[in-house]
Length: 79
Image (cartoon, rainbow, N blue to C red; front, top):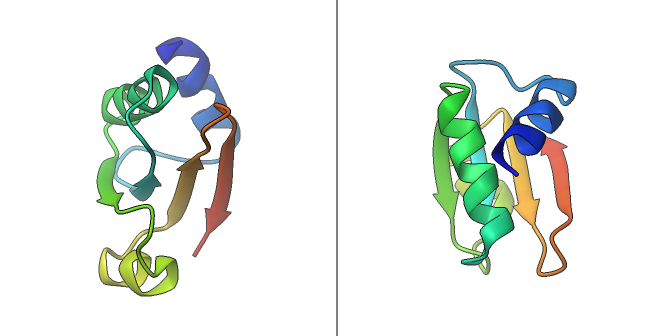
């Protein structure tokens, strides 16, 4: 699961050193995404699910925003 998430991050252009905002619940998929981001040497900014996304992502200087949905899908946005 971690390797699969890492491959997805690479295809999205997430590089080592990038700040990635992560919105997720406590699920196995979310943990795999987090571990893959850390393994890729990104800086992970954990955002509360109900937070104002634009403001929090800007405060974190996030280049990418990943949202792990309850069904396990991951949405990617850039800031």
